[in-house]
Image 1 (cartoon, rainbow, N blue to C red):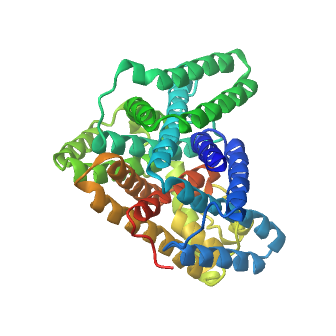
Image 2: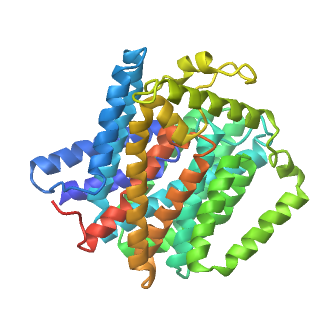
Image 3: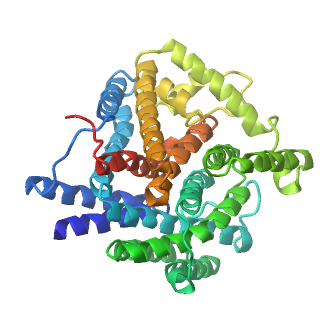
Length: 441
């Protein structure tokens, strides 16, 4: 029992820190896996099959084969180590099968999301991250990573407000207040020239806060999650705007449209009218991004052309994981504005170029099976609404948004985004187990 509680606390801390620190989240993943192994050895838990075991195993095996056939196998195998992150799916599945623990982990995701979007807003307002060449990165190394994570927490919070509405009292907002106060102090230290130390202390505090939340009664967790969601939605929407990341905008539009189509179809017409108004008005803050003739768009076009050439040249095993940077100069079109490209700004094309068409097929099999499971659980929980419906529809909207955004950026190449997607993708299968609809052995 103590190991189970420790595992829940570790996973909650991991869920909160995934959106703020890749080092902290990977460290917590390692500790969580050690605890899970101890529980398996003690026979406290029994690992069971899932419908996505086959595509995940096939994708992992093909990735390693692609690394073997790469021009630089050692470097390709080094990049393939990211496959270990997929263990997070099984870890989260074991923990979140229990309804209360699922609520605790999802509340921790929202808590970390609040910290991220609040810091992005503060960076834009007070720290000079207000230009196209200087966009708010939050706690992370790149603004596009921050935008991809912001997209996910926005949709999870919106799904909770839509499918599990709850009256919020002032005393329920204390946890959100602690996070916002911490972000305010962190912003002050960053302005004073002490960003690294202050950020480390904040991440540690956030992890401890999330772990403490995981041990709280479920009613306390639900109340805190409702209050956090009310703050996350407007702050995340603003953070996406100031990030000026068009891929994240496309993903947000797709995810919110999906939620609106299910919960309030009339909002679709309103949303379409607002988008049309923005395109026609072209406000100064967005006008420079509502174009396809800028340098980054042109560069993407030639990246995709080079990526198609890579696939045609090596359709079976691809160039190898992590080999796009070294392979790109051989396939680069002369008209491309940049001589180098670390990736191809497209999930589908990147995976096909790195791991061949079979690797892409296994990836799409996994992603499609996960989306189908989310849709089934969303339909099953739609009438009753509540936390299960919010989780299922939230995950479904996140998967749709990540896929759409991933058509113009390699968002799954960021470990932080991949870890959050893996964590959330376990929820439909956890809901299926809780309903007794697990996959046959």
